[in-house]
Each structure stands twice: as C-alpha cells, then as structure tokens.
Length: 92
Image 1 (cartoon, rainbow, N blue to C red):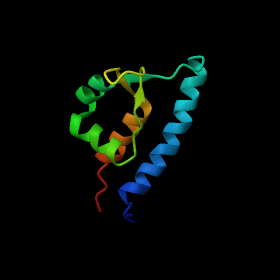
Image 2 (image 1 turned 90 degrees about the horizontal axis):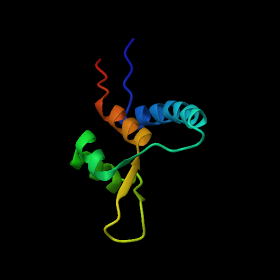
Image 3 (image 1 turned 180 degrees about the vertical axis):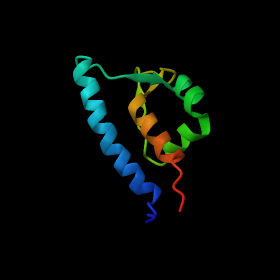
Image 4 (image 1 turned 135 degrees about the vertical axis):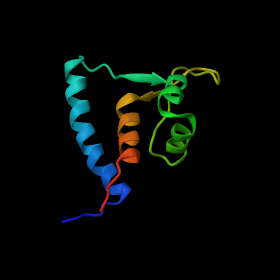
C-alpha cells in the first residue's frame, strides 16, 4: 500500500521527532542550546536554502548582539529538521 504525504505533513512529523530529541539533548547538556553561525549554516546547508527558510518563516534568526553587524545564529536542530523535510523522497 502506497501513501502520499505532503511535504508540510512530513515536516510536522519530523518537527515532533526533533522536538523530542532536542529536548533530550538539552537535558543532557544542562540546557545549553546548540547554535551555529549564519556563515557556517550557509556553508553546511546552502545559502539559498537557509535564506528561503528564513523568508518562509520556517527558521528564526537569533542575533548575537545589538549591532547591525553582529553575528546571526540559528538552532542546529531546526536546520537539520528543515533539511530532512526537504530531502525525503517518497516514491509510489
């Protein structure tokens, strides 16, 4: 039996799985969030993909300071979730 799952639904499923895993990770690291700089996020996940996720409201920027030139960070778990949702191929 084949199922067709929309990308949004796959993203919701992965989001919940990542939430559980991320929470366990936070508990294991005494609550310290794991962040990656924008520059490293662009290199690891692709500039256009990261920009697209931010523009679509799927990824939130976390400024590292108050200045306009301060480093921007992203949560690694969120980046991984979005990449997984975009790379899963469901064949019928």
